Amino acid sequence: MIEKGPIFVSGADGDKGYAIVKKLLETPNLLNLDPQPVYAGVINTRSELSQEMSSLGATTLDLNVLENYEAVVDMLRKVVKLILVIDPLNRRITRDNMFQYGKLLIDAAKAANIQHVIFLTPFSKLDPLTPPSTPLRTVKQPSMSYRSQFMLMQTYLQSVFSREMTTILCYPGILHQHLIVFKDYIQQHNAIPLPNKYLENSVESSNLDDIARAAAYVAYSPTTRHGGKEYKLTGPQLLTLKEVCSNILHGLGRNIQVDTMDIYRLRGILTESIGSRNHADFLLEIWGLQKQQQLLGRRRLEITRDLEALTGQSGKTLLEYIQDGNVSSHFQSLKSIVLS
Image (cartoon, rainbow, N blue to C red):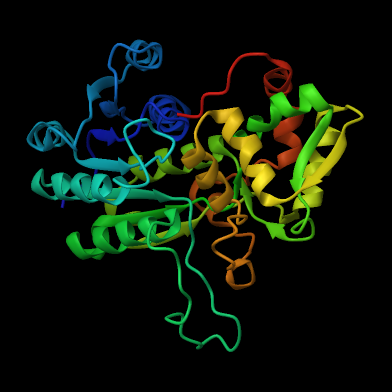
């Protein structure tokens, strides 16, 4: 097994993939490591984001596994490690083709003899209620739910590659950066929209920079150090939705009210904000608010120290994120929201 080598990041034109590419390029200087070539799989190699990654030192490549599988296999033959980012907010991925997209990338990685696949997923496994041995087969999920498709991809990956060649990085719950989708509503109504039925429900949260740092550290480590392991990357706090709102209010330092509403109106606000019903459904699902799931009582909510174990640093809190000057300016900005 080849322990280190060039690294490929799929979905590099999305928020997560882009952040990971940047961390991969920064990490050698931070940790005094030998740099590795970094390849970024994108939709458009001429986009502003692609050009920025190229200027930083990454090689951007057109990743279209749905239409040009053999070309993707040839791309992956250049590298040793694949950071597999499947981003439902990506324009090329839809609810209907997401599993097929991931499966083809996994097949291409196998055909290219990739030595280490680092798979990012926003969903952790569901826990039964009590007792702990209660089987989960009675829990029915919609066949096209994002959770079920990510779980299928993870299962497929682990069936194609031997255990020691895969690492799972789970980042469950609310991603701090996604809360910017509410900025237009805050500006127009001086209020934050929240679902009226779930205010006391606890949610996990994580920060994009922390996730990207962990992915980069795993990619630069020898494969045998993290191969066969699953990590759950959470922030240092478990918050209720009401506390999430309080952190946003405090961080922005504004006298903002809370607008409670049913889940359908909240979905409409999200859809209008980001321009896609499917993208809104994805956010609601990873936040644990998708009405069709009704699985909130079965999810394992926890704070882990996996991030600290991987990087030596604890995660950023939601309040710390909101209080960052650049973040506050995003909430004040009139620019349109782009998450993909």
